[in-house]
Length: 108
Image 1 (tube, rainbow, N blue to C red):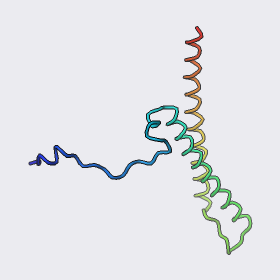
Image 2: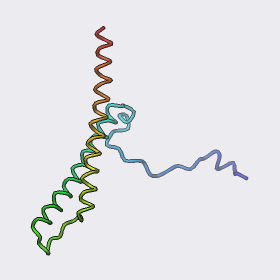
Image 3: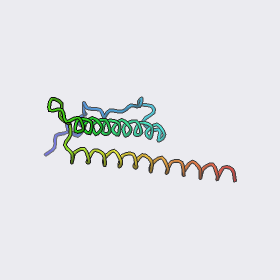
Image 4: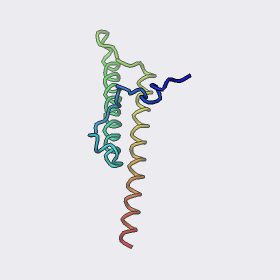
């Protein structure tokens, strides 16, 4: 049996998802794309930074400063960065196509 209190007062989550955007901008598709672009590019930067540092450490062969990543993990992060960049390029291309079609329809 369900209590009336639960039905009238549903639980409220204290956690709110993080967003770069002000509350008013979160419904704007362009702003959402910009926020997603920031997330993706920061992730790619982090991946490539770890890959670069690990490759340098392997080249220097200093036992006091071992690589942060082993070779397989370095390869995985490289592929992840490539996939993220490809995703961003694909989404950008789709948005450009939509904007070009809108422009052509207005010009006609």
